[in-house]
Each structure stands twice: as structure tokens, then as C-alpha cells.
Image (cartoon, rainbow, N blue to C red; front, side, top):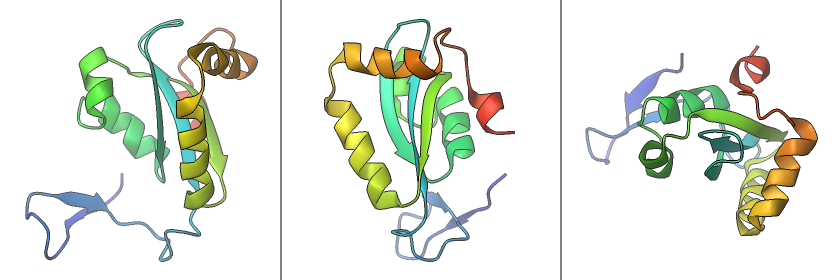
Length: 121
């Protein structure tokens, strides 16, 4: 479980994860795709802490889009070396046609299984 702490100068109710990486630009990150069912609604996102983000999305406290459409199944994820690479890949995949995203998922996960437990081991 990651530690949460208030940040000075921000809304006192806002909390952000403390990471071990001092230089965020050189920390790695994850690009991921979530869905609600086989070939259902898709959400592409990125994060430095995949476990925490998927947990947030599953209880409706992460992405508003995931909460609205009940997206709780992690069907694809890729780890990158820097947050800059992570953001670039996320933006590129978001611009893809839906069929391309489905093909990306099905190459790695043809059954559309929830990969959370597999990846987080």
C-alpha cells in the first residue's frame, strides 16, 4: 500500500502518492487498457503505480470515465522506462482506431482476462 500525504500549498483534501523516485521524468510508468467486458468499452490510461491506479479505478475513485462505465478489468498493460515515454505511448494509443486497440489487446490477451493479479505478482 502506498503512503498518502497532503501537499503544502494545495487543497488540504488533495492527496498524492509519495514515490521513491525523486526525478519523475526518469521514473518508469505503465500504459494500460481497462474494460468492463469482452470487447466492451475501452479506457487507455497511464500511471507510475499500476497497482494503486487499478485499485482506485475498481472502487470508482480513479478515472471518472472508468467509474461511469464500470471499467474494472485490466486487459492490457506495458511498462516503459520513463514517464515521458509512457505519456507519449498513452497519447498515441488514445488516437488509434478502436479496432487497432482491440488487436493490441488480443495479441497479448485473446481471452480478455483480467491481468491485474498476473501483472502485480
